[in-house]
Length: 491
Image 1 (spheres, rainbow, N blue to C red):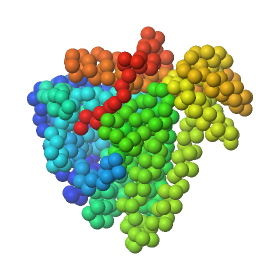
Image 2: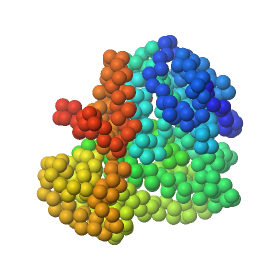
Image 3: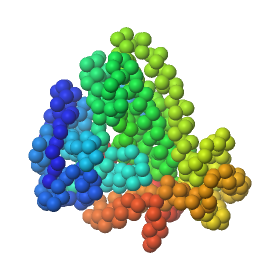
Image 4: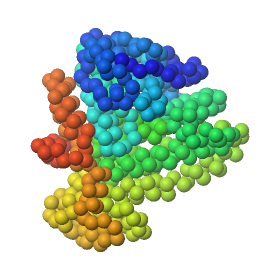
């Protein structure tokens, strides 16, 4: 059933990873399998056998051709450098070539206690596995680069975090699991040759247009490319009200994919200071801080690449710094493009930034739901009936003042109201993974062994832009007694 493994990472120098076979579990049960993704990856579903798949996706059996390993990496965690992290509970089975000719990693999370586990048990609770499954697939459906979820298996065992919880294993798919922290691990050890190997691998897999470049320019261009892709990624997060929660350098993917969905959440009432993560006590990764934390993380990547850019790293500081200083303008352009699209604007006008800022201020003052505000704006563009939109605002004065400005700006677009509304609905989701609906699904699964709620929520989120009659509850913000104020890593 599995496609052929390529084993690109396993053929790198041995000190970049540790060979490690997944540790078997007691009573595995397959509770989710992403058939469309499996087809995209080249799985032979005509030969699909659920019992066999359960053994593979639990780690009880190694798929033919796989050579499992745990990758080495370091990372800045909430600003503090930890020189040795690594895959403490994850195992890379290998890479497969998907139907588009792209190499994709297949990894098991929760597969056992590796040499990088740092005293942990190497296991994953069911709740975080299902959260990652739901949110990563929702992000993909909304057009945001993200790792994907292929399967989830319960283990028949308990894991101990704040309380005993059912254990699970997630099968994660990524363009690669190269991180800023991967480079930091070897930079901290002064291993320039390993850095070169990793940088060349990153270019080969994610930035092949740089392959013809040579010398230090090649690695300076890699830094620039990663910076641009991360800026575009975070602009998309901001356009959805998404808060990652643990934007550490070990969770910053060189590919530009969203990596790690531990304490992530989607904002409801708009407030740029919003934080959900229970471990982010200082609000380092609050919603409004995400663009600048991305710049900080890419600066750490830049530090690791200095000896590749110039033999004397001191000479590489100036060109690398110049790239990093360009980040605010790059991010601003990406973010403004996202926000223009959300407002139905295709033309670029100098006053657009002020228009966006005024809307966000009105939303903040009115405690309006982030997602529904933009969705209802689409209806307002088509019908010119503002009352449903205005009802989202506790203090509606500012939004009433803003709407005429927006409508005046729409007159510069060469499209009618229906066409503008259609464009807006194609980028402004109606359904997001609202915290209370996600928690409802996780509780049902963990406490009652009921996966129906999880499956239904996954179905809704797979079509985030399309109105689904009978599922109105999935679009509504949490009631007062349903609100979730804290999310947890689950590590």
